[in-house]
Image 1: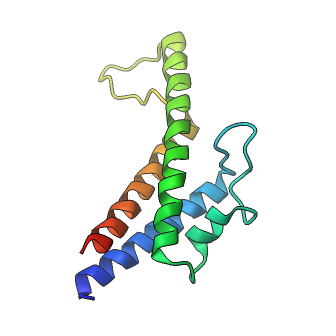
Image 2: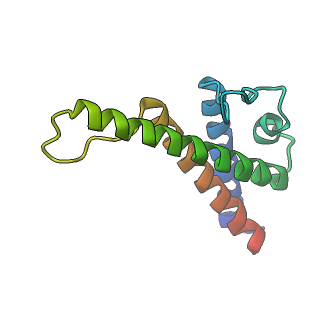
Length: 125
């Protein structure tokens, strides 16, 4: 394995860990009736266990990315509705039209996307 591939895998693992830490910190749930992201989930272990395989990490990232992106859309709709109702001063049109949770979830989705890209780049070679 070349140094670049090793570095890419290390970065993908670190991104996975960071995303999982965020999911744990915010008590992420895919929906109101879903279980909280915690040690009771296999995905939690696939993302955080140092002994987990990269294939398990990749699968966990893909699954969590789908769930996080669904929640981002819900939070975006809530944010857009709030923005339309409150009409805050926005002379540059750059205010986020998403909730605080939505902004956090967008960050987590970015971490997961980058991790997925890293794992895929190394598994395709």
